Every structure is written in C-alpha cells, then in structure tokens.
Length: 400
Image 1 (cartoon, one colour):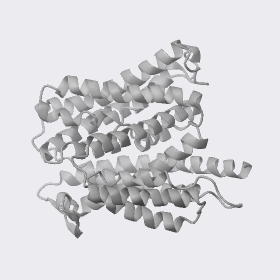
Image 2 (cartoon, rainbow, N blue to C red; image 1 turned 180 degrees about the horizontal axis):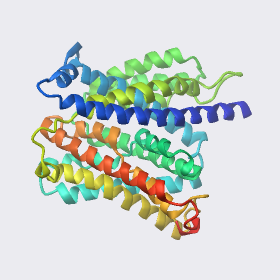
Image 3 (cartoon, rainbow, N blue to C red; image 1 turned 135 degrees about the vertical axis):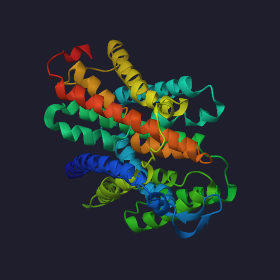
C-alpha cells in the first residue's frame, strides 16, 4: 500500500512539473501562432492547418485536415489524461473525501456560473452569440501553472493545491458542458457501438485485466465510434479513463499510473502547445478598438477576467464565513486573490469550446479568440503582479 501511495505521489509531482513546463511552452506556442498568422503577404499558417492529410472518417467533419487531427484526434489524448487525473484525484487523491471536495467544488461551480452570466449580460442581446456562454467558464491549468513557475517559491503550496483542485473540478464541468450542450445530433447506431465498447472496457476492469494493450485498442475504437456518433470525439478520452484500473495486481504499478506517467510529458510538452499553436493564431489586420469592444470578444474577456475572480473569490469568502471549510495554511488574502486571478486564464479549454460554439461561423470563432486572448492575458498579468508584490504574512489566513 505504501508503495502504491508513493507511486501516486511521484505521478502527481511529475504532472505538476510537466504542466508548468507545458504552460511555458504553451505561452511560446501562442505567441508564435500570433506571429505566423500575421506574417505579411503569406497565408502559410492557415494553409498548413487546413491541409487535407487523411480520409473522411466522418461525413459530418469531412476530410481530415491537420487542424482536425489536432483538435479531434490528439486532443482526445489530452482528455484521456484529464480523465485519468480526475479518477485518481477523486478516488485516492486530494478530492477523495467530501470535506476535501467542498472548497474546490464551490469555487469551481461559482467560477463557471458567474463568467457565463457576465458573458450573457454583455453579449446576450444577440441570439446568434448565445452559444458562446461556456467559453469563459474554463480554466487553463497548464497556462496558470506556467505563470506560477515564473514566480518560483513565492506562492504557498496550499494555493498551488487550491489552483490544481479548482482546475480539476473545472475540467469535469467543461467535459459535461461539451457533452451536453455542444452535441447537435446523435447517430443511434454509433452511440450504441460506443456504449458496447465502453461496457467491454469496464468488463475487463471488473475481471482485473491489468495489461494496457487491450484498453488502448478499445480506446481507439471507442474514439472512432464517438466520432461517428455526433458527440465530440474527445469525450471518448474521458470515458476510456474511467475504465483504466487504479488497483494493481501483484507488485506492479496500477495501469492508471503507468498510462498517466506515459501521457503526462506527451500531452504537456507536445499536444497542448501544438493545440495552442493551431488555435491561437488571429489575424490582427484591420482590428481596432471597435473589434475588441464588440459584444462577443468583450463578453468573453469580461467573463474570464471579472467573472472568474468574482465567482471564485466570492465563493471562498462565503464558504469560509459559513465555516464550510477552513483557512488555507500559509496563504494571505492577497496571495489567494492573486491565484484566483490566474483562474481567469481560460486559454486551451476556452479555445476548444469556442470552436465548438460557432462551427458554422468562422468570423465569430475568430472574435471569440480575441476575447479569450485578451481576458487570459489580463488575468495572467494581473495575477502575476499581485503574487509578485504581495507579502506572505501581510494578512492573516483567517481573513480569507
């Protein structure tokens, strides 16, 4: 049992290191995408992303392009890692007890609801923009940890754990939103095939099959079935993760730990930065103040920057005063506020939801990107500034 817990701790530390490094790479990839999208006299950036490099796997999607392989293929591995992380944390990690779940659950719920409300207040007068309500609801843990990495040891461990826990619950909410609200139609035969494959995977888990190969083969088939079903294919990653065994037979590591250990550097150091590069490029030609304060980008930016801090910090204050949870060890109120600001970085998941929200309106998707970049940048700079200049003992933790 001790060896099992030690393995879990190693995976968590490796995940944190990889996420922080991946966040720094993601920042670089986003900056590179902006440069590539605005090079004078060339359309190479968009031409490469929309290059056909595969067959038509789904009539709904058409021929597979570089962009589709990244967003619908590689990002399924990102969601698989998210699912593995969720399962581990909820069964034996930081969120394994109801008392541990209270703070991040309330903070994440408020941090998703308030940004969506602010978005609708700003952009809701135009019915064509209603589909973007969930864009500012997500937090980019890689980007946020990348900012924390720049601060070194200035941030208490309790706040890093709070950020991780809120982001974990946040990811769960984002997955549910994608599955429930961004699925236009369902193919009954394909969804039946997906359900059958899902059942077989859990049968293997019940029979204590610990070899990863059959799970990986079935995950690939599940991905294709979900792709055909009309549900976004990346959801297959989260579904598959629930079937990966967390208990090992004999002295070997659990399959979940082995798979998470293998995926963490691949996702953090390659897939997420690649996704950022493929989706963050926005042409700034002709964009002025009017384009920035248009309802869609303004609603997204306001949701991320204002909605996240109002929702999360407000929930922490209310929960603390109602004695629903205790104080954060070693953290001042200003430091807590700085980390809450970082939760307004919605980069990866917000870009992902933005593409799903306006599939038939590329210009609206581009406007959403402007809001995402603006809101995320404001949150990152403000959070960094507060954490950089706040003093650890300036305020008592009991005031949080």
